[in-house]
Figure 1 (spheres, rainbow, N blue to C red):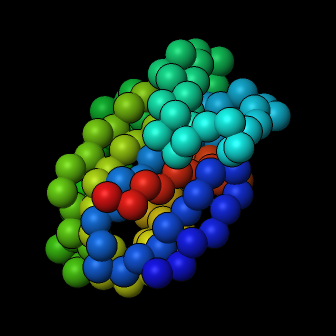
Figure 2 (figure 1 turned 135 degrees about the horizontal axis):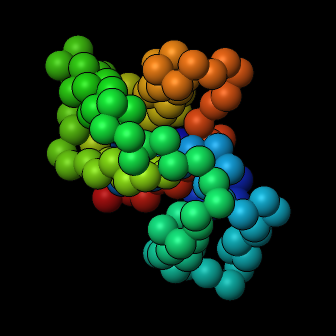
Length: 141
């Protein structure tokens, strides 16, 4: 198991269920810092999730059914191809929550799902060069 930190802990444990949230770029207030020494991972997640729910200023492309459907299709495609087991997920207007079990590297799975959905969504939206949020949070389940 590999653990690394940015603002929040990230756990990379192949074969173990993990709860992950990722968001659209601009969905969190710029410069928002999570004081690790003052928050448990659960408190940090709750704060992060509340900020995403309350933010109306950032991108909300996932509220469009065509965009949300492509995220769902990609999650199912990755499960069908054996990259992960998907236990549960929800697509929100500006972020995605998923409980899954990666069969390989979580970091690689995240790179693939965020990259492929961003490319497909940008094609639908007629945009180029935009990306999903670099930030994500994973909680060992």
